[in-house]
Structure formats: structure tokens, C-alpha cells
Length: 352
Image (cartoon, rainbow, N blue to C red):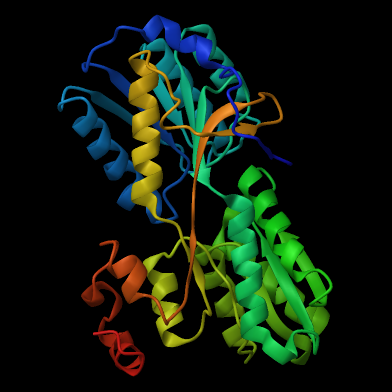
């Protein structure tokens, strides 16, 4: 699903009309937050508390956050969104399980005068604002890291591409970015769109790839995120294969695999920045304020053009910069990462 960046001009903000009914709101606003799943550690550990903290800070602790997690169920998320519209929240922040399936609920919110912030994934329908990371750049970062890890072996065998779910527009952008770097420089033996991003599905796909390609012919694996990388590495270990594997999200287990050397890299996405932007967008929309300062970019979705947006930069995470990324930003402590199982590996790379 292609998403195009438009020039950051002075075009009229599309979709902003639904915020008019929220104009003149004070700090006592009700913010609905819909997150997609709880298998990935980030949503409950980082996104929810960070968004809530910033919203409270921006409203002198007067705002109310109404929260629901869809547990990877698009139908459930639509019900949750509809309930929040019925209960008249002042603004919705939605990280869609399925960007197309949520479209009807976004339209209902719009029709009820409730502005919608698409968070992390570009939901379809008349959304008022969007914030995420630069997803094409994420894919490019992963692809470049894999090329670096492969070095002169890049074309000596085949790589496997384990992409994300076909229902997630981000997954298409990650793939797009990765392919823009990898095409012509590696031989792609197998490529999968992994249902629901589930590690067990990635594991099954990897087992199939090993069977089809032969274990001696696989030189690397592009994995779109850390959860899937865990399933992939389990399959690789069972087959006696050690090759570079990429990832994304800097999950604790992923960082520990990087320390241990079983995963080559992850993409560190500074969640505090993304969460702060979403909170600022939501509060401004609920209070009828302009988004010009918080949303300098414009993004087109399949249904809505020129959505006011903010894209947050990302960083490649390897064993060489753990201290300068997730530890420096307070995501994890050395003690979190360097448990007894990983202490020797931490000592080896100077993580103390």
C-alpha cells in the first residue's frame, strides 16, 4: 500500500474540520487511545504510559485517558472505537490493527465531530493527523545493515525476506525501503508476508525456506521486526545455521540477542518522541488549536490527501551503540539487558 510524502507547503490541512466541535475545550478533555496488540512489548510498556504522561502534562493533569487494546483483532478494535465514539471522547488516537478495516470507525468519529490521530500506522478514512517513524527509512536502514553484515558474501548464496503483515501499511513501506537497498546486491531466495506479525508464523515460514533452499545456501535473513526475528532464529538454530538477521523495535529480547550475537541488528525507534507528538496532536485537536507547529509534514493515505503529519527519525542499533541508544534514553538499564545468561556476552562488548 503506497503512501506518498508531499511537499511541506502551506496547503490547507485536510480532515481538520472535525475538530471544530471541540474548539474552545479546556484541559478537562477525554482522550481515547486504541492500541493494536499486546504481544509486542512496546505498546503496554512504552506507548500507553508515555502518551498518558504527556497528555496529563499538557492538560495540567485534568485530561482523562480512555484506553483499549485490540489484541490483534481488527473487529474488536472497531467495536472499541465505536464505543468510544458513543461515549463521546473528545479525540481518538488510533494505532490500527488493520488500516482498511478501521476506516468505517474513523468515518463514524469524523461524523460525530471527533478528530482522529493515526498513530504509528496510517489508518484509512478521514483522519486529522498522523505520526509515525519514517517507515521507508526503517526498511532502508535494515537493508543497509544486512548488506554491511554480509560484506563480500552478499551474493554468495540467498537471503530470506520475512516481511510483516499484509494488513499493515507500515510493512509494505518497510519492504519498499529494504528492497530499494537490497535489489541487485543480494539474491532473494524466498519472501514472505507474515500473518499478524506473529513469531510462530515467521518460525514456520523460516522452516519452509530452509527446506526449500537448503541450509547451506542461506546467507542472511531480512526480518521486519524483533518478534519475528526470535521465531526465525529458533528455526535457524534448529537447522544449525548462523547468519545475520535484522530486526526492528529494539525489544529487550532482541537487544539481548544482539548482545549474544544471534541477531545482527534492530531499528531503534525513539518511542518517547513519537508518543509526545501523538499526545500534542490529540490535545491540540481536542482544544481546536492549529497543528502547524507539531505537524510540519504532509502524508497521503489511500483515502485522504495532505494529512498533517510528523515523521520521527530512527537509528540502526547494533552491539556497538547499545549504550548510546536504548540505555542513554532510559529504555533499558544495563541490568535489564545483562542478566546472568548474557553477562559474559555483555562483558565481551564492554556493556557494564
